[in-house]
Image 1 (cartoon, rainbow, N blue to C red):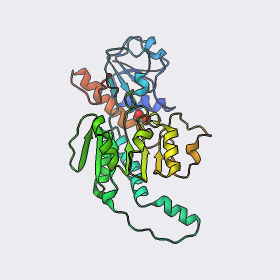
Image 2: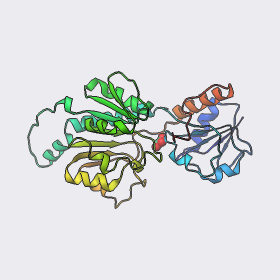
Image 3: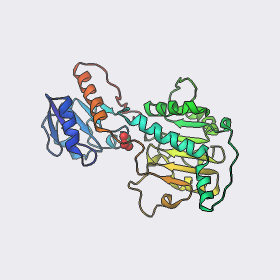
Image 4: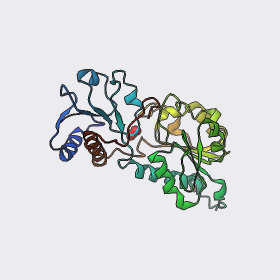
Length: 307
Ligand code: OXD
């Protein structure tokens, strides 16, 4: 079996060794070396030359959860199944990140940090949890892990997705008709949406204004989901109390971007979930073995909807 590997970052040799360990029979070629006829391609944000250099493989595995960059490659062969990572160790990491952000907001840690800078000893009254709903936008494997991680704390939980989901303890809102009531309960809005033509710019003034006053926004999905200027204006007016942003329209976030120094914004460098090599390779190898047996695989992308 021929496998073409084109990896994120610089640790290509670690990816290659992990793949070789689980698929010892495979002949692995690392981009820019290419087998003429790969059976499978494992890629992350590939250059468009990659797909013109080889015959169409049997399947393409995306070495990340978001397939927006891959689906935008003009040479991506049509009709080849695209499979993305669905958890691969990311769900636990994202649940940690978001749980921290939600508790940080609920326990008003920014206010205490400001008070500390002024040597001010001033306990604040406990906030009612009933008014501190957490709304998760996008409710796939990652969104569901986030909701499960938050469940023990007793916040009202809601999810917004394309199709209705039935999860105990989580109110499901579905489709554009139910976006407004979902936003109205989300004192913390957590965005895990895939970036598609439908979701690009979804967090603009029109939607963000519908959050309760003093809401928090947590974006761990893609920067293009947010209209930066609208978020900044609502933070400046106080309508939105804070934002925790892990992803940006341009990464690294340019040094002169106003997000860096905004007192109500926490910036992290796209770290809410690292792509873990052993976990990712385990999912890909299991997928290859299932495909070889003609079985369905998890993470198969519906190219029409974009994730
Ligand atoms: C992903 C990412 O899509 O790391 O997995 O952004």
